[in-house]
Length: 92
Image (cartoon, rainbow, N blue to C red; front, side, top):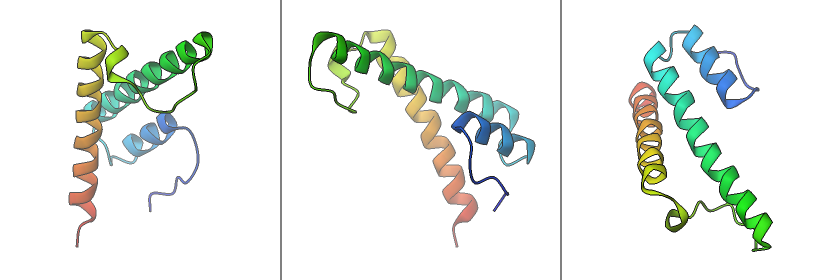
């Protein structure tokens, strides 16, 4: 639709900001959300690998600090906001 089919998530966010699909503020918030979620995911996977536990793609809430939980919740809310905007923009 906007001419960008491939690339990294951050590259796609930049592209959609340039096309004025996302505001500068939303693009910044989305990048922060993606970064936070990926950091939590990679950290937990690394801990699983180091401890010899079975590797899982599920991010475990019980192993997070309060700060990490708050960051994850805020990040998920940001992604939900983007999803709601997309649904509103493309609904029939």
